Image 1 (cartoon, protein in one colour):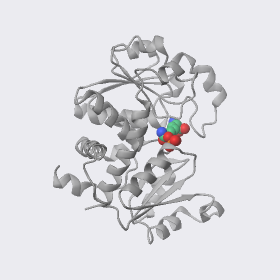
Image 2 (cartoon, protein in one colour):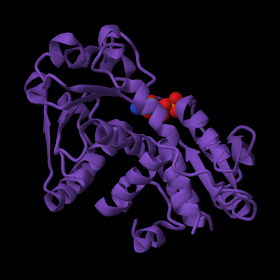
Image 3 (cartoon, rainbow, N blue to C red):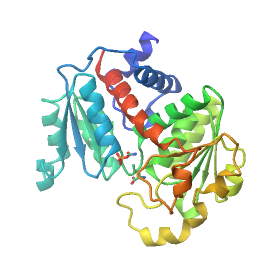
Length: 312
Ligand code: CP
Ligand code: NVA
């Protein structure tokens, strides 16, 4: 693994995949795969403390991140926003400046992506996105790793079915662009990806040999798919749950839909899922589902990120 790539990642924020090159993304995936194979027994984070701030609930991210830091010899310091003075008006600026005097990195799950940008603006230590309304890059790294484990370096047709404007949809689209995949977002038109993020994904894909498209037709989209991905129709904090429940049912990932894809299609979901809504129980626990591999890979990718940004 190239020394210049290692140097380029040191001290970096991990806020969105927009900030990472295809080579850096590959490096992080390969490092994650090495961690999964148990290649390292050292404790590179020994003596380092990482603050973990949660404005929203989390099971996978909370536990995989804490365990990853602990297994690398570091200390995961979990902080809920209600326990911090942020809850009574202390600014993000002061929070970032103060935490930077104690900890070696700040990871946060936030309601608004701007919160991460403000923390990163003032922090003297790297800031890692553990999910915002716009992006979920740690998830997408684990998802890309899961695809690579299954399909190697094949160029894939990846189809995201559901809420095209979800954080997971945006980050997966960027991961596909970095990987040079053919990525299709099948979604109701009112729930399309953010146009600016779509534009950036298309720009990246034009350089990697990938292709990004958006359609309203899930059946046409999954024709020839190697990967079908879905996520909840109602992400945490979205205001229009009732409206969504009316428009999303044609986008359910069920056995009829996956029968239109390649025979060895994998079905992905970041979890938590709402069985019987965006995915049926039979598909979620069926032979095509790799959802629990994705969940496991969150542990290995979390190790890769913190090692890469914190250890020379
Ligand atoms: N996929 C994911 O981020 O799950 P949690 O919300 O449980 O962290
Ligand atoms: N899109 C979902 C992802 C949960 C991990 C949400 O934001 O609620």
